[in-house]
Length: 359
Ligand SMILES: *Cc1c(COP(=O)(O)O)cnc(C)c1O
Image 1: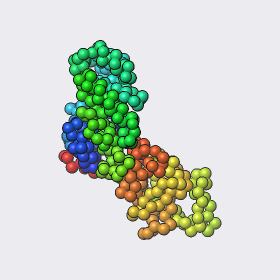
Image 2: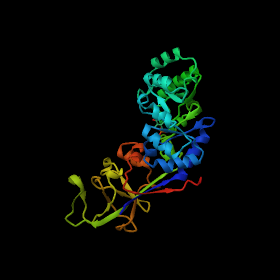
Image 3: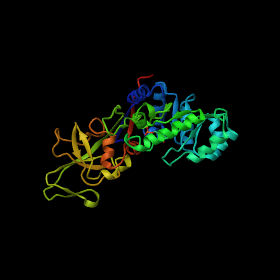
Image 4: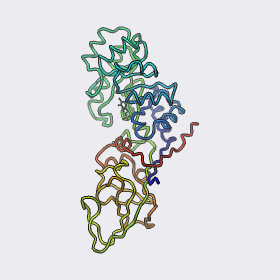
């Protein structure tokens, strides 16, 4: 029997996409659905977004793109981070658009695939993927007609878009805009947080991911997005600690207090409740916080429900992510980011999808 339930609100994802698209106009708004749509399920998410009018999607790998091509036969699909040279036939056969990250990939695409469309990735300061400024200058010097060799545009990625005061944002933007002008190409720039840096930081097309899924693209202020994820887990057992007390959980790291009432909830680090939440996080019953006591186990946690009314009983559902506690809040407490919480959601839940309302 499944003891957890994960509810994904497709109408909220669609509303978030529409909000980002309205804000970003006249820039075009795509959707990043890599890593199984940030753990939420590629097929239902991609179908809901396509029905809402999104026609361009970004994934990380060729395998993800091939899977998405089966789901959406007509959408534009770009692949951010796979090898291009050994896979040209597969790109072309599936009508996938690669992101060319280095001169060898540009050369191979020109020779074997042009004028099929591709994106040129410029490294404007992140030093992760993309052509370096000198590689770009060399290409620029030898190419006059970028459209003829299939280039759909230039893309680049911000390192610090969630911090509007970071000087790298303006530097990266200026380098990307200058490169797109020099080549006469369109520019794809903004991720979720980049969209909120303002109109000048977006480019001609934007690539939001996390904000679609309800995470906060503006961590310096209130979350403008709708919540998408609800995660609940069932209480397995409730115990009243004996007078002689003792400790709770692995490592005996927390004291059990006499008369304390402890509930064991069926969710652990194998389900995406990070072990870093040991002794720190909370779950909620009817809006009341129940602190995690001791270590997070693989399949369960123990929480203090001594003061809760009505009394917590076996079979009750604890809210782990929901109206009382966002994925971002859980992430903060675990010392990580909401992206990691969503992408580590496990497979042991009953997953249900609230309808998008677009079909
Ligand atoms: C993951 C990713 C995005 C989406 O970023 P969010 O912060 O989730 O909006 C956009 N562009 C690139 C290159 C990415 O790797």
